[in-house]
Amino acid sequence: MLEVTDLHIEIEDSVIPETVVYDFDISVSAGEIVGIVGESGSGKSMSAHAIAGLLSRKDMKKKGRIVFEGEELLTVSRSRLRKIQGDDIAVVFQEPMTSLNPVLTIGTQVEEALRIHSDLSDEELKKSALEMMRLVELDDVEELYYKYPHELSGGMRQRVMIAAALICDPKLLIADEPTTALDVTIQAQIIELLKKINREKGTAILFISHDLSVVRSLCGRVVVMNRGRIVEQGDAEEVFNNPKEEYTKNLIEAIPKFCKIAVPKKNTDRKPLLEVRSVSARYKKVTGYLIPGTKQKTIVKNASFTMYEGEIMGLVGESGSGKTTLGKTILGMLDDTEGEIIHYSKMPQMIFQDPYGSLNPTKTIGWILQEPLRIKGGFSAKERSEKAKEMLSLVGLDEGILARRPSALSGGQRQRVCIALALMLEPRLIIADEPVSALDVTVSNQVINLLIELNKKLGIAILFISHDLKVVYELCSRIIVMKDGEIVEQGTDEEIFNNPKKEYTKQLLLSAGYTD
Image 1: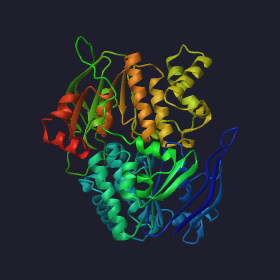
Image 2: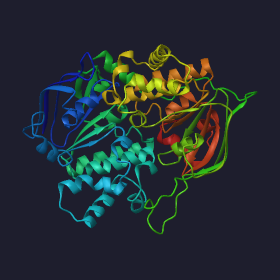
Image 3: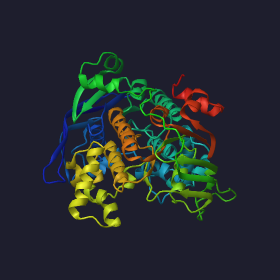
Image 4: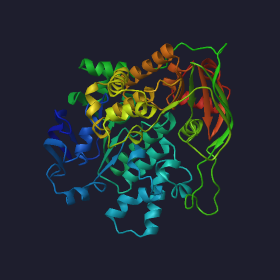
């Protein structure tokens, strides 16, 4: 069904053009599931977006052949490509908030492809949208249909994207990190959903991921990429059990496990850095947001906890539990709140879950990194530039990307830029909202080690929001567990992992594969 031969992609938006994909070859048969794995920046997403016809024709040079059901997609007319996109080939993107229109309701966006490629009535469109939303395990779909993307958690937005991609029953689904933002329980459901769709509808899937465990559970064949080149490919079990290349072996060895790399810090004699007292939060009601007769939903309910100087505290729970909303409330990003929040430090920073949505798409990385210093004042142009280079180096990026814009970076590179941006003002408190969710296993380990180093050297306290319990286990000395907007349990890492009191906490640990 799909045959890609000698695909070569070159970015031409800087003085020196850069090749990001070299001689890429892949084939996908009808009904097959093929995985593409590799570190951030390896060319996975670039290759997939080229297949979907989504790369710019202005500043990207593409050579080779992409043949889908006998048609050459690199040279096909725009009108024909638009007919294929969404109907025959659909894409689930890595960053749902960037892909969803912030001013359109969820229902409108799930229906969009079906509206373009069919003649269904409004009533039939809505019925199809609601059915698809239920299929991807979304709750309260009648109410969700009228909501907007900012009112949903990251995991819920990702499931909306999957529903929108599947609504036209495409022949090929390109899934670019579709489970990145999801907690372990929902991730397993999405994988089972993709298997079901493949099995019952015969939909072929090109699955791009840095999560090797997910790829192994889903894909029949796997392609391993490194620095724009395919280094190994073959039967998934054969590649995982008997990898031939050293790079593949290193990737497999880096798969996260429950191990402690941070030294838990005691709170004895430490001063409070943040106090949260009986805080509740909801999104401000705006006309049209709610179905008539429904009540405005409280996202965070009566949350209380204290953070101390220099500690790393974990905030865990499933998608939609209120973790991100609590983080935003602490930094004063929501207006409709109750309770008391006391900060004992200045300029706390946040690393957002969606890196592309928090970076200015019209500016270069250098400009973006220097912006906090320009606003604060007192820094020369040279000092700002040197500070930006220093922060990039800290998060493992080359200063060569300073001249690029966010669209020219991989998802993992953009996430690391966001971490560097949060560090520019040297804050004492960072709220990190899924800061490694978009990163491959090797880079994730590097960032975790970086956060630990920053914590040790500079005493930066971190409220680490995550659904990945392995990462939380590595990093955090105390942990808060949230469910349906409420803090159901909090305590030291040993108490939560080895002696959980609540059944919900036990289920989270079981889903993550933790055994004490």
